[in-house]
Image (cartoon, rainbow, N blue to C red; front, side):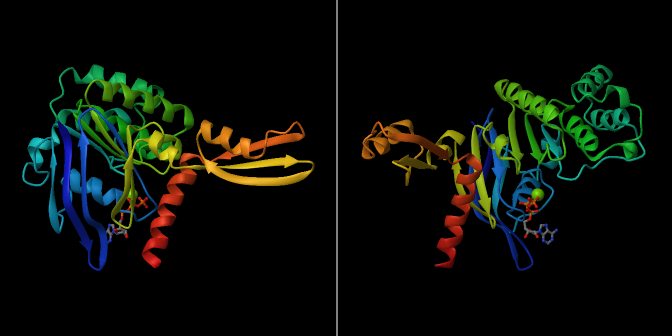
Length: 286
Ligand SMILES: Nc1ncnc2c1ncn2[C@@H]1O[C@H](COP(=O)(O)OP(=O)(O)OP(=O)(O)O)[C@@H](O)[C@H]1O
Ligand SMILES: [Mg+2]
């Protein structure tokens, strides 16, 4: 079953088209990554899905519900971590999370708050006012708030921006565990190592979807640059990023005994995603 359905969704801000006739299905229990440059429409799309903005046309269904008409019903079942933390600065980390938890009537709330504070490595600062926290620490409190009521879908808008690498990895381990238990994770990011950890990556630009694919398939679209030095002469070739192609490419060079060096630079997911975006820009210009 699809956790999220997006059908011909369009959102304009005056002359700016933030989402342009977008359609996408997200199956339950998957981790969907949303990547794209600044202004691509990631936040706008997430806001449309959590019912915090009204699209101009098209519709979305989240857990079979309309995010605007069924806002209150849906709110209990979804978690949302906005791009900028929406916290009460004068409340402590603990009280911010308790506040969200009470709003959702979470059973056994005190224990759950302790557990999640411990997960986010905030126990020693749990009773300090959030205004005294660093940027990354505020993101962690916001993350705790989005999870405290065990939602079925979690919308995370750049959750790990400003979070240190150790905790970022812990968060991704938790995302995978949650997905295995059936929770759907819809997460925007600018970090390509995170795109590799998703089940599917949606590449957005100018409010349009350029590609939706597994990270492995996206990697297959890459190229490798082969540099060979034969008798002190440099030869180069561009090949597809697969081992068989490497062997074929080398055969063309004869695999001579006087080949003294073979260097291979394979595109990483960041190179490929950038080239998908650039291809589309060229198409638009030509
Ligand atoms: N409230 C608003 N009023 C007018 N324009 C807006 C508003 N919110 C977003 N936009 C415009 O809509 C487009 C998409 O913005 P959005 O915030 O969705 O991008 P994003 O992909 O989340 O970017 P970032 O990576 O910087 O967070 C941009 O051109 C932006 O200027
Ligand atoms: Mg954004």
